[in-house]
Image 1: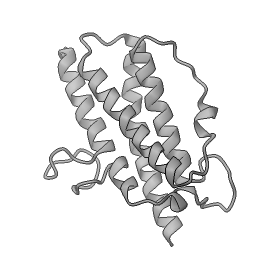
Image 2 (image 1 turned 30 degrees about the horizontal axis):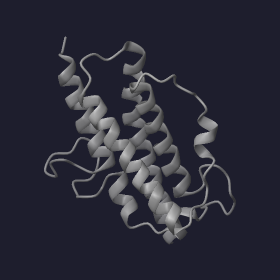
Image 3 (image 1 turned 90 degrees about the vertical axis):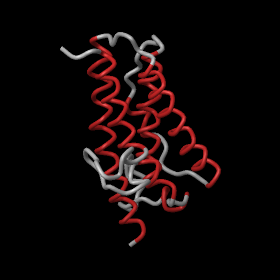
Length: 161
């Protein structure tokens, strides 16, 4: 059995790698060994026009970078709400409602994603016990972030080609 703080430290390390990039560039768990290779770093160089361009030529859910970013922001917001003891509202469909964003909305969305990430890290660090139903949901955030990081990277390549 491992102490809860060991679990939380590992979770925070992996979540940080997914969103910010490797805390120690010489040793990563699953992403590139470069600074800003996490979700938030990749998004730094993406314009609102690029974020709103559909790779499928339509406004289908999940067809834009902005849609994936809003989906990630929403998922972190739900985890944060759950951590605060609020009931979980499983309305995944609404997490895909955003497809396009102008410059102001795009900047705000990236800031909100960073804020939800920071809140989750701080909230996780303050836990002394992890409820069983919360445990699986929190662990699911790791492969979820990795999947969307890969998808966003592919979408960036496609909208720029």
